[in-house]
Length: 108
Image (tube, rainbow, N blue to C red; front, side):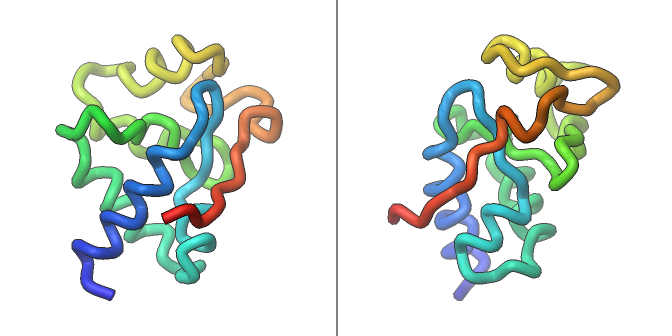
């Protein structure tokens, strides 16, 4: 699978994340059959920062930390976007992470 093809598959899944929910880099990698590729999912999220059709703010690390926040314009844009969807964030950590977690499925 080429990098471009992988990134597009990541984007297809990211677009499916429901409003008010989050998922992790690893969960996306796992559903793509590349469980050890969480870092590449992160690269895909970083590469899509100019695409408004991809809710990259809804992808966090496996512990609910906003590890990708520095890729968003402004100092707290990722947090603000999540909070506008009803997700509480304190110290870059999603509160009640399990409650907000969405397990991706492959729907290409």
